[in-house]
Length: 211
Image (cartoon, rainbow, N blue to C red; front, top):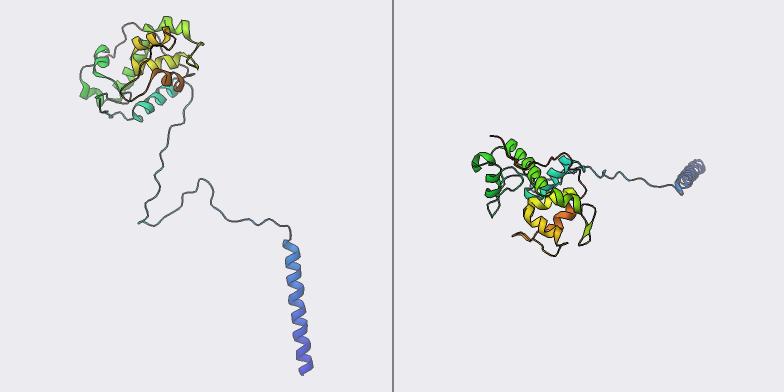
């Protein structure tokens, strides 16, 4: 009986050894795959843990909608009710004098009307395009301070600095510059907002917003 039991034990040991050898041979040179989360997986966390804050910027195209939304994001992060420390208001950060030129006098109504703000932006672009039409024709495609001048860059710069200051910048080939109270200059806007299709905007001498 002892011999029989010993023989059974030896056979069992041999079987285990053969099985282990087969398993090792089977997984040699095999790649191990781990169950890792995908890049867009949102992990869950305990309530007491403050999750990371993610700030998204808009993905936009080089059309007029892309132009106005990019400019609005730069001005106010696209917030219609934004009022900055200098008193500029709305999504596109209009000043009081500019709004008066567009025949807008009730600032509170303007601040609470997204529709009027969008109309005002188009009207101002039309007005600036009329004021700067000769400069657009003369300077688009040329380089000033290493920046290729485009119509959208000119209109964005006029929104920042006013059409008169943009004229001075272009006609002096960048020698006469403008910088706002926050340190932003025409050159920066010429570069940041270059290459958008603003052909949608028509030059209008007396552009206003209808009440």
